[in-house]
Figure 1: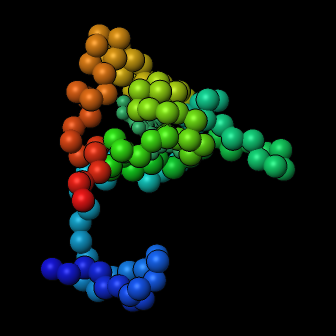
Figure 2: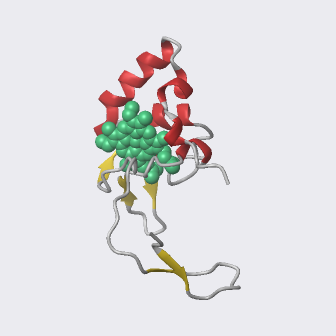
Figure 3: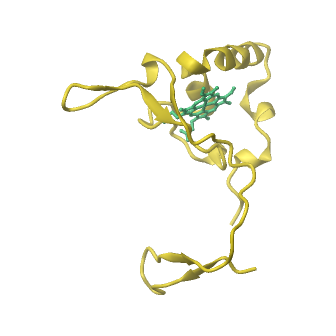
Length: 118
Ligand code: HEM
């Protein structure tokens, strides 16, 4: 089933219009909620306020989407996962234990973490 139609063919960044019905996205890997990941992610704004919560990034295709974090400060998956703290501290620590045991990201992340070819 065709889901999208290009409405301005020839444009450098063509816009797509949804023409199909509803559809389900699988392996999106986000809860679309805001979380406090601790000070390593906090962002000071120009008005002096501190942003402490960020929306969970969809992990779909994340294997080929470096650099990581809203600020792009992590150059690889290991770094951004180990930067998690706050609400994600327990998950981060479990990953760190696996990582120390030699599992690494490539065995931990299945193929769907890579962008599809072509
Ligand atoms: C071991 C489990 C986890 C893995 C492997 C993981 C992996 C990742 C990765 C790779 C990113 C960067 C995505 C990108 O920049 O495109 C990310 C970002 C993020 N993760 Fe996790 N994560 C885990 C657990 C969690 C948990 C438990 C939470 C919330 C309680 C969480 C909340 C977030 C948020 C809010 C971001 C966005 C940070 C930002 O925009 O700077 N993660 N995660």
